[in-house]
Image 1 (tube, rainbow, N blue to C red):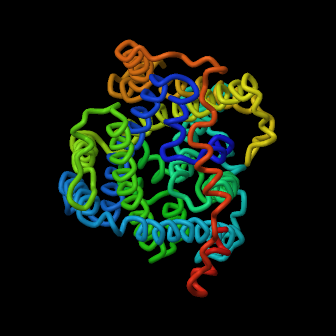
Image 2: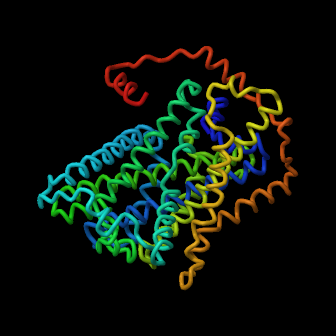
Image 3: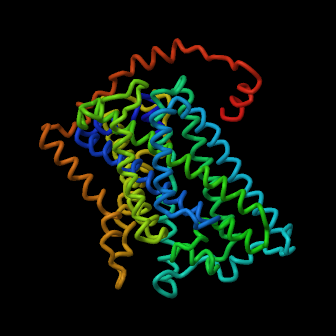
Length: 457
């Protein structure tokens, strides 16, 4: 993705590249899949907010919390959207501080600096062990446990798609975007891998509070593994602080998804690939009908009222995971087609502003892995006694909808599957190159901006 976006930094790039380098119908299917992906994350975060709030008290009914959060999202995205970028910037810094703080907490407490003076270290890697059995016993059970973690990782790992979406608005994108992609990769590896390591250090998978949270949707779900660990060590106050920060992160994430989903649909409508009504904007430029549709989709969060939170959260995890894996598959296949077009038209990748390594082998590896995992994600419904219609639908709906969108648009618009020699590799490139040649960097206005430039550069 970094190679494509650096060569041609435009808005909604991987969606438009899919239409430009493969087939217009392929781009339409990718666009709607990305919209569903973003929109489905809104009710997920709303349910998460509700679960976290009920860590402190059950006084407010779930439906009340859900309604309040949806109304707040509506108000923010319609009336206060001009402060979106600024607030998200500071909230993002808060998330980074939170994860760094939790990693430091893990290191300090595992060495015995806790109220119990328990130097537990890697104890839980030995008792009960690092690999949990799931559904079956023995090696098969441990493999299924690992597979479940892999499916969960497919849900949590995101980054290249979000970074690419900013390409059209980034300052000096051909210089900025390669650094951004590299840093996303390293930071995801650092935070996700170290975060997973910290969870395994802090809590055994046999902990009753944690297992009750995931199986029955009890209040422990709001506590998170870190808060469960703090309760085990009889640490006070800190669990409430952590949960408050997690709540702000969940609320912020949901607000971001309302914004991104509505703009994705707005972009599709502007290109004539969604009903024209979604191009209408309020006086402040907000695509009001797009926001309304996303908020209507967020009403799915009320499913929690008649089901336990753990089940509802898992439904949305299944839906989002399938959509995200399709997104990554689209990116990988689009790059493969781009590379073939470069070879067919004599455009050397050595002349591009950024060149990926080990290509196209890594692209084929990503395409194969993501394609397979998109089908594996809901495998549990096929196990004896595990059949569930909602779980099946949330896990496999987008896998069926994506080809239907592709075939339907191709049939309606008679679009053409592009031959590599027919792909337009040079459209909009001249404007980007002219901008890059004439770009003059803006110096920081004060020491604080200078510091931010150094930290995030």
